[in-house]
Image 1 (cartoon, rainbow over the protein chains, first blue to last red):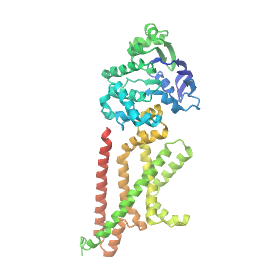
Image 2: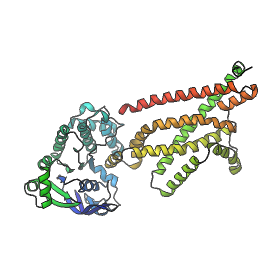
Image 3: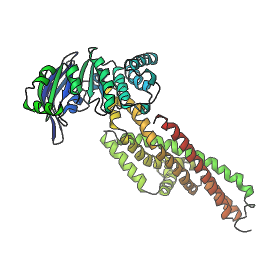
Image 4: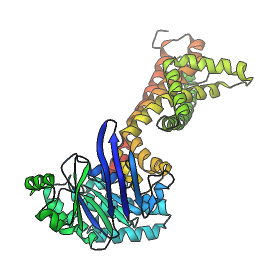
Length: 240
Length: 220
């Protein structure tokens, strides 16, 4: 589904990612973990070209999105993204947030967009919030709306960039529940997270990044029981 | 006689009021055109088209760096010589004020656009929203909400500066007051009336601005 090949990224003199190669299969749920500043978010953002890699290639469904010839807008319609700070459109109601892209980007009729929007709101448990503005929502509610907004485009892949890091502790669970439900639908997911329990439970594979390198790729069972690298061992000792 | 002889100018009051219409029309036209022109300049300034960008920056610099009254005089008197087009007073006035306030407004709008959280842009991009749509549907509405008070201040400034157009003979409030002064040799009353009219108009505009802002803040 997504293939990353010899990917490097630097911001000016700062090297953030070094020569990363990995692949996400259809329906896979990948948890990307590692210490702060290890390049997790940058790697994720390279997958829909919010960051342009300095070197290397990213393939989505076999198409090289880094070649410059691909219509990235078309590709992005297939890839949903959920951000740490939600980024809901503040001047639109919750329902309008969900209807906007399907109507304006995919030219879906208003009726259909609304139907789909209400379905999704029901799915994330926020049917009663359809007509309020995002500023009236709690952090957890905002993030659930943000997930629903991405899903409204019916993406094949969902990217999550630390979706629970900006939330109060008691709101983390409601967002993780929605994500768990989503993982069971068979959609492809890549999740940058600090929620180790969640990663262990939901992910098919763990990518451990440190210092811009993909240090370890393993199943959650292996990774959390006996990580191969010393660096991962140290990391797990601190966070678990 | 005496300074406060308002009785003398009472017959001229309808004449001065005629100037209100001209001043209002002029301010409205300049605000609307200045806003459109300023938006265009702002979009150019944040674009990636280097030569256009450079031109827009130079343009702004020139119009902010020279006196408005000089620009007005220049447009009114130089246009006929340059283009052989006999520009009317009101045309010259609207054109100058549009060009001038466009320069100021473009900076306000540019700052407003830059102040919108860059996450908004990224969210729109990640949904596959094309640049133009993103600007018009997502970024600009938020930018305008933030800069609305500044835009209203700009139109209040325009309303007051519009008195300058009397120098090329546009029959605005100021010019009408000048005429009344000439007819009555009373310097005090006509300008006091004119000043009162300007003040009332500015107060109304300020009040309207507050109402509009209140409505826009609904989503906060």
